[in-house]
Length: 341
Image 1: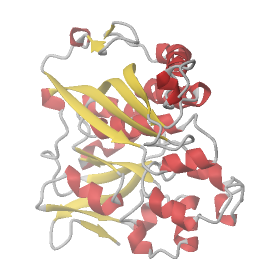
Image 2: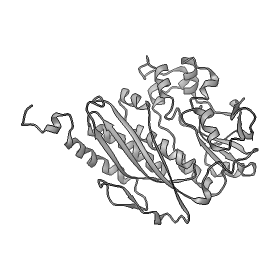
Image 3: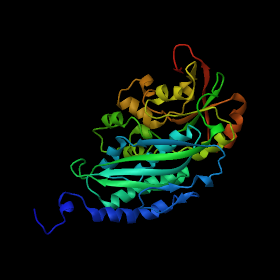
Image 4: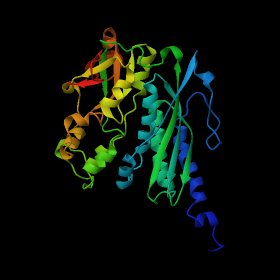
């Protein structure tokens, strides 16, 4: 081994590239600043002053998640500027489902080879997600691990912290039979089921324009970032208009919807009331997947579901500046938690 070259660099770790990443991402982090942020990027811990929130009985609610094998498509198609939004969305959509306003976010990127330009794109996507969620990006970590990952590979995970008034926490206890189920549209597949998605489209280049996709390239549809629902839902929570919230992620309707109500209740959903997106029709067709199974895997076009008292439905529709889909009701449980007719 030559003594003329830095030993760490010879092992495959480029410290200088790590410094460059930090400098490159500072402008993206700056976009996410909000009241309460303390300290500067690069410290050993991110700081946030809770006294700035004005919450009387504060409860901190946290969420952590990754992007899953959707990352493999970002790598395959060499498009890295939106995958960060997926990471933020998976975390903040979970905590808004508990009634929390996101305060801050931290990310973790692990890679086989630190390419500053690429990692800047990843963090730019994280920053965009934070802006949409109203959360500050107050810290993170980039790890270069040759041997653990291939040179072109990377993984991405995140952690979000939100705050809620104790009296406004959404824990399912207020959901009752007769509540109306309202759905907010998804932007696409979001970030779940991609092991199956990749198998279905394994022999495709991504440049195909399938008849079902209405003129869009397959790769653009598959990498459409996960929608963030914070700004639509938080006003409803603060106004006390929502009894329960379900974030439709892995496990689709069957696994996620029951998480927002007690065991003695069930959700009755009308299939014809769901705005099924073209990509799900394509997946069902080309993957030869049973229609019923699709609801056990994907969001099918509804990314977030609300349980609302009948008298509040019109007010919710008025406050949410988009189409809200009335897709079902809460009923007394018989033998199933979710009934899709």
